[in-house]
Length: 388
Image 1: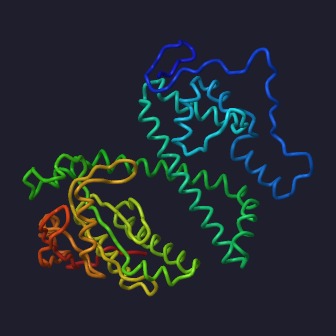
Image 2: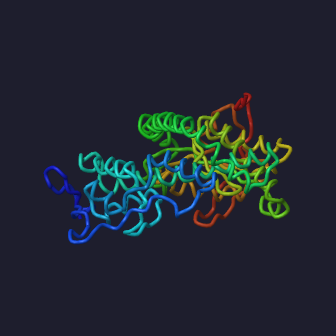
Image 3: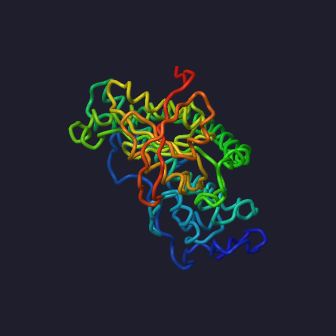
């Protein structure tokens, strides 16, 4: 398949199909476009939803999928690949589901491919990243706003969700502005992490290595850490929805704050566990010790088991992979509540740093790694991370 340049008709690659002419039979009248509601008076609630949709989508839905694809110069199949990457549902040929902004967005992505800036595979991957991240972000924001309304106004959840429709118009522009601002800041930080300082990290990771380690072919050197709440499953079974939500939010907020202050990056949170990375063994150690201490001192949350391993990783799809990640996960299960475990290689990298105390533990046989030599990490000289 290929993307067809609308001016020259030249094929640029083999992923996207050139678009046929819009499939409207010249001998038949086009089907009427139904954009309005059924006959009758719309409720105030429905009018508010319709007005918000028009604002968010850039106008009323007036286009079918084939019309949008034709306007962008690709086939339905090619357009669907990008729509699916964004997380859109399937629409039928007769569904009036799109606006001119949808067509413009599709053309923007395709123009990057036509100009040779992105390959089709890269365009789909980048598009998927936007779709997945914004989907999670929107759900997070809506739930946060609803929860706040329930608590502050004392109204039921269902009522809060209906009232939120009326409040969103006043928030949209500000939230969008912050989103773009944050994206640019995060992109700059990502360039620094993944490019500018990547070589320095690899050079630092060579110390104490023989070159035949399982992670040797991987491109990035990072401190990889896990923090796992103790007894989360049993606690969650005894909690109601409100209490569980508060505990999860408190856990994520505390982790995000400590990891950010420590100069690390929160990769993901899965239930009662958080995965994070840092650029140096010392930064990873400081974050890990701060997390263990914070949950030990917290009056609501249980203690946490924490681990950290310095090694090489592969970063893909917003996640990280490799033996270093797997070993850190295994060490978490071996750690005692309130403590931090590292492996022998990480301990060697921290051995000359007076800020840390390293206490060897008994050897353990770990699935997939054989016999390993865990080392407990403890606070030495200095105050550690200072949180406001």
